[in-house]
Length: 143
Image: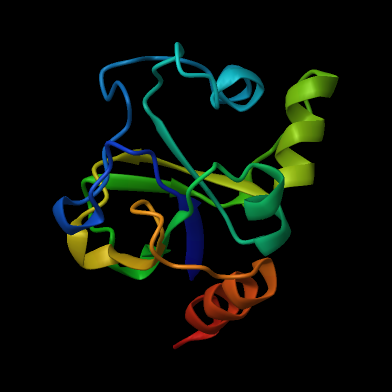
């Protein structure tokens, strides 16, 4: 299975991906409700299998990475959106989880599992939203 992630400016997929604070011990619903803030540093790394989510939470510069969950190894856990029991979650995290189709990783995601597909951090590429969708769909569906 493959998922997609909008990278932070400090992330380098060639070195693998790390959570903001791998030693943290937050509950998943708290991360879901607050995880996109700069001040919260959790042990989770968020991704999605929904391209539309990438546009809902897009940053000024696109840096998108495909993560192949078959290549994460034993040092990383993956919690796929459809396999997480949210029945005892409060309304807000449950709604955000479902709207974004968020999935999360705990642990280091090795470089072998990461493929940088779009990087306009230098502002030198001009891609339309539709072109970004096509690129992402190609990589998400690639075997």
